[in-house]
Length: 224
Image (cartoon, rainbow, N blue to C red; front, side, top):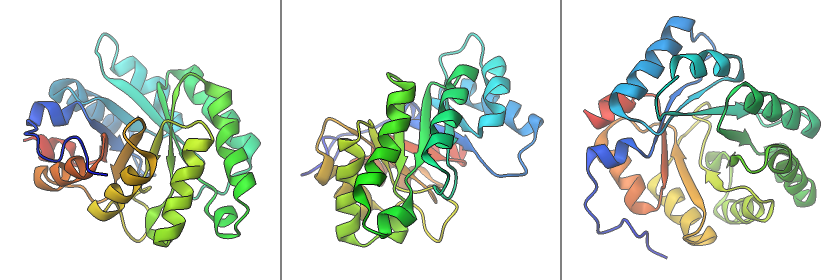
């Protein structure tokens, strides 16, 4: 299945509204988060993506803007207990998060315990419904067949997006993975490409392959 954006011209302004402007490094400071929010407002990015601790602070800095807030759950390993993932998601939403990017339990998936992988995702989805849930499958750790299975599970669990990567592992988003995920989940769900996207040309390739959202820390460089 080809992407609807494959042959369409996409402006930098349009691309900006597809970007989650991201700062998840452990050493991020208040000043850096404030600057992230300032840049998101200036360049009209879709959202900022921050660790749960900074959600309230980001919300304050984004007051009066149309920039959303995404936060992460079970990040970056995905190995937290399901109950804790659900609580973390719930608290992030109560603090002001509009969307949650959760990490799939990769060890559980590799163990082929697909039923509990789906339950893990569904618990978070149900806890914060109708908020958007993006599920990170960490594609660089999966075979092609596993990427297909993981994408199917994400959608079956009620989430709205399949996300390629945390950006904290050995590789990030690839055009091939984005195209594969899009072909599996069809046109009605989201695909978020994240990890290693640092320029406009790479971001554009991801969108043309089927990405409906881009996660990037180099967002300003991408749109400039």
